[in-house]
Amino acid sequence: DMREKGIKVCLGTDGPSSGNTLDLFTQMKLYAILQKNLKKDRTAIPAKTVVPLVTRDAAKILHAQQQIGSLEVGKKADLLILDLEAPNMIPCIDPYSLLVYSAGVQNVRHVMTNGEWVVRDHQLKSGDLAQIRKNFYQVAQCFFKEAAML
Image: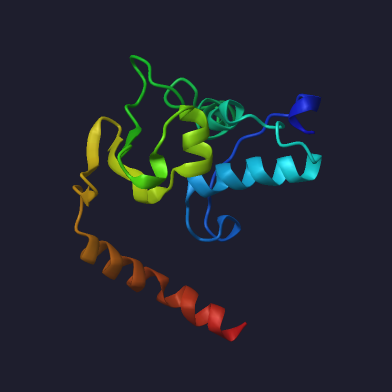
């Protein structure tokens, strides 16, 4: 309804409100399914209209469309490559539907951020995951203590 009224809409993640997963695949799927259910119309919200909500439209809302949101010369090379051989990715009749309804974080094979490979063949390439976890728990201790008091 908001989009039909010209209100800018995008999808993103930030932690608790996205189920702590930071998983845009889940957000896309939930958005599409919940809107179809609300409207009682399985043709509402075509998958092709959902993908821009996490790419081009999100960049516009963040006023960052000159740097991100689409693959173009001069923009940051932020991309992910999915493994299309996994059972949940077959068959690929409509790539947009595949992204919105079938794909998940388990299908992400490679990730490039700002032109640098961060994940290759499902393996973290920048940083030590054990050290990242250790740093997180050190920083989060005060939050855990405060949350326990609530």
